[in-house]
Image 1 (spheres, helix red, strand yellow):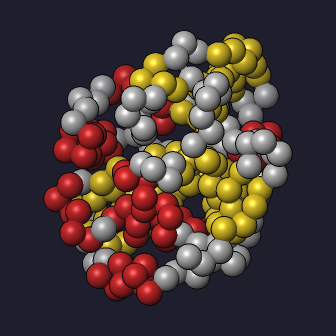
Image 2 (cartoon, one colour):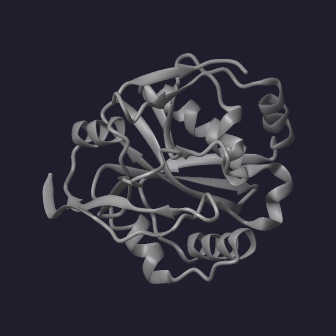
Length: 232
């Protein structure tokens, strides 16, 4: 690991998950992490984009809960099996990071239509195609038309979903859930133990889909221990 900027606290800003609250991240910049180092940081609740590693350090809130799925124990629910059946026309390919105009177009349209944001090519490059650790990408296709792009980090014992975007024209296939299910399958095929799915915030509707993946584990910020969340 090559530390570029040591850990520090950012200034508080508006929380993207809970209106009326402020968020603050602890962050550092680093490169050349190996899989063991990445797994250690993920297990301690860190997330990352490119060289930027961060985790919540909000003084009065611990609503952002790190989530991981034990891939050997996971079985798709009835609803998720319906998604797989409905998305039978989709296929997924895993491979090394590969920057393309189509990938950015998917990312731009996804950001615009889902979040009302105007994506910048520079941010796309810095966040996803300047890796600071082992990484790979998933690509969703309908026949030969690329319909989605996923960025994944690869730890010694895990896959970590960094970001997934899909062409809104294919929203009826529920490509977000489909991609998670396929990435869990990929983690299992690679003999890995965990699949990290970012932060879960119980009161945030846009993250409610994560509650449908069980069993899973949540990190307790107070103790630093992971606890299992079973069936509803």
